[in-house]
Length: 378
Image (cartoon, rainbow, N blue to C red; front, side, top):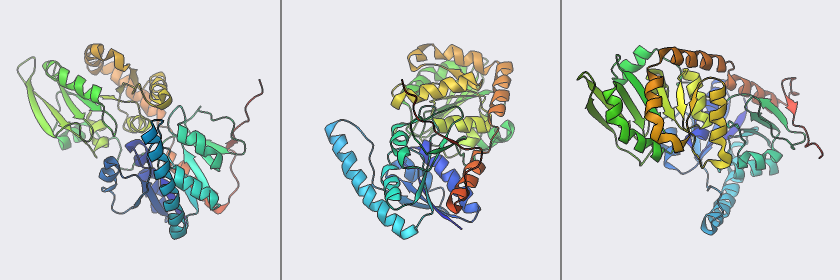
């Protein structure tokens, strides 16, 4: 049995795969301790998994504004000291980081304590935390086709993002029955990511009546603090009742995606992995201010692979016709589903768990790993 520390807090996109990996490690007989932030989204999601061990690490996101910058350094110093204590207490064989501001302290403490570090990046453009901390890592997991040059000696494995075990594709009839959704009407699910998306929430509010008139039900997850739980009714074109649902948070994402004909969503890597897992077509609206514009890169790749469409936030005013045309085009939706089925070709959790076990045991790397090349001279 080995012991692992998994740094994954701050956003649902980091915490969800961390939970998935922890579940798989525990199922293999290992110990796993998850490091999360003090944010509400972490508390809300982690409380669903009482069988797992969570620790809240002092941390804060980076920013150049003087007060934000000062708070970042203060909290990260506290996080480093906390991490040294945690390492002495749990004595991990390896530390796994999923990016984000909860990673820095424990990765640094791990490196200074001679504990091997593995990092996972799910976005098509590696984030700042991964770029900076990768110099302290022994292993880096990247999406297929993504490179991080200039890290000599770092062994890279290309694989996907771990998805929680309960996020699986169900039959549409079963999912809709469990949600109480009309099986005869189209269903659009709107997701703004773990933080919610104000522009998508406003678009839903402005278009609910028009979508209902066309016979489209809407289920909108607004984000914590950005909406209340409620059900509304609108008249359809033929006088039928068409409902819409609104909730600030959902721990039934697999159920929602399985019930949906189409998802309208931001383009975080975690959401895209769940769409692939559930084979659910989507129109992606990348968050235009994401670091390094990584959501745009994610959405471009998703569209190129044939999983759905990409629409920029600046085009939201023209989105409703696109949604109507897509959600009633069964041929196109089936084409998207077939492409998504092709994209879900590898069990990322099994790949990562097997590799972590080899790392902890000191097993030499396999031929599926490659060293990151040095930058070419210019």
